[in-house]
Length: 358
Image 1 (tube, one colour):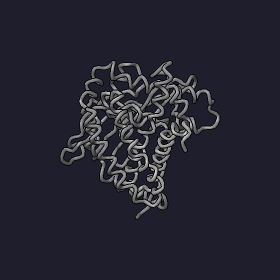
Image 2 (image 1 turned 90 degrees about the horizontal axis):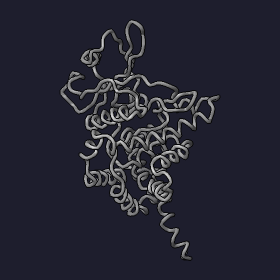
Image 3 (image 1 turned 90 degrees about the vertical axis):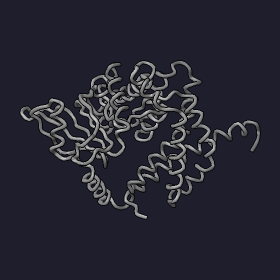
Image 4 (image 1 turned 45 degrees about the horizontal axis):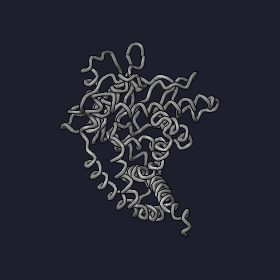
């Protein structure tokens, strides 16, 4: 078995370059897309996207060199989510939430010169402010400002989830999906992930815990989908997609809504927890305060339930990494899934210990 993620960084770079050659829209087609929106006298910069099937290009005014925005072309399955992406960005803008401004959007048709395929095109304004991930890594930035930005990110997420009850377009989008459909898809994915990932020697110990907790996880997920209304989730919220005011810590823009879709709210918290664990406590507490207020019992219950969702979330990431032959990263996600299952098992055993049982 190849282990690109662990041993061969050059091969990883080669893999992404090969994917970019496959998923690249012709330059003339890109110009036609922008021209169709009435944009004139522009130049398109070099591709900056890191995703293998997603293109992002800076677009500048040819005369002034001013950055006009970013053209994003997403391929391979993105079309089914484009409606969620556009709906959520528009709803955030109308509600005064700090989404980056959506300037134009369209379906991907023959933009790449080939037969129509599923996909999506958006053109968004440049983000304003300081990038939160860069600020976290930059020496000299006041920790209080970073905490404020993280805190405000949690509040933003809670308010974004409440758009289901406040924006008719969001409510309509969410109503298209059923719990039964979500549960069926989840079951198919879970079985595929376990079958694929447990073949690795590095994951055997983790899957011992995952298998032990399988029934609890499945029952827990069923409860989550029954207990919590489906919402439009960002699905990729983390510090690198947040921009804030360097003087006050208030959020100015949240970017990259391309993975937005309908699901339970837990997964949005888990993305932040996965990719910024050092700031998660502050982020989660502000989310809980904004969402549940002084109902501490419900807030505590919500946090305990994260482990059920985390098992699936981490296996989803692991499966995605494996599909791209990034084995070391896949194993890291499986480890996080295993840790979530151990916490579930420990909680189930706790009442028996309290009663004096071994």
